[in-house]
Amino acid sequence: MKVLVVDDDLVLSDVIGFTLRRAGFEVLTSHDGQVGYERWLMEAPDLVILDIRLPGMDGLTLCKRIRAHGNTPVIILSVQGADEDVVNGLDIGADDYVAKPFSPSQLVARVRAVLRRAGMTPVAGTLTYRDLTFDIARREVRRASQPEPIQLTQLESRLLEALMLNIGQVLPNETLVTSIWGVDGGDRVMLKQLVHRLRQKIEPDPANPTYIENVPGVGYALIQRR
Image 1 (tube, rainbow, N blue to C red):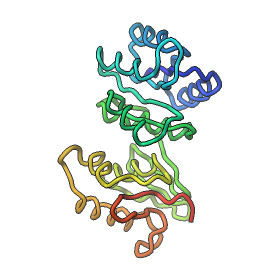
Image 2 (spheres, helix red, strand yellow):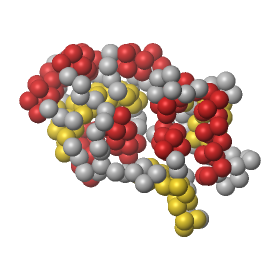
Image 3 (tube, rainbow, N blue to C red):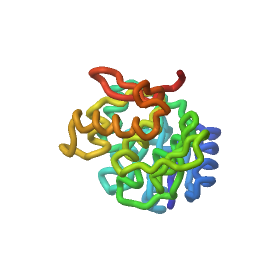
């Protein structure tokens, strides 16, 4: 699959490109918004990753133009990580919004997640959190101290993937419900039950969870340190 990276930070662009190529993607790069738009027209990539602050054409304008003329998935990268910035980026048509700094491996996982939501088949991969390794394609979790894999259901996998893509960040209940069941497909009670089931499978002591944190009235997060 082909990914177009539009970022005027040459060092970061190289890091992203290297990481994506190692994960099996073909990578195109541009350091100018206008040139990036022209490459999108000519190359028809499967996904675009772009910064907001770009010469030639800013990233928000570029995202709007892409969305006006096609359905190519777009991930925005930006140092502007406030809630209003994220909401604005998603409102203009971006499929995901990643605040800088970020982990390159997390970005690859987000690329795969966006491609799956778009109905494409991305390269299979894994996510890691503390002593857990999650095989997304197989829906299996392995704990370092336990050789046998833990099999997850599709809904449990969606929940764990969302949490592992945002380690240390509290994901609102509504965001998780939409991500797992789609619009109008679930509710907070169903989410609470799903979290309980996932804890029963992955927590060393489900009665005293040390992985999945509940922030009352807000949502859930994977605890960064304990």
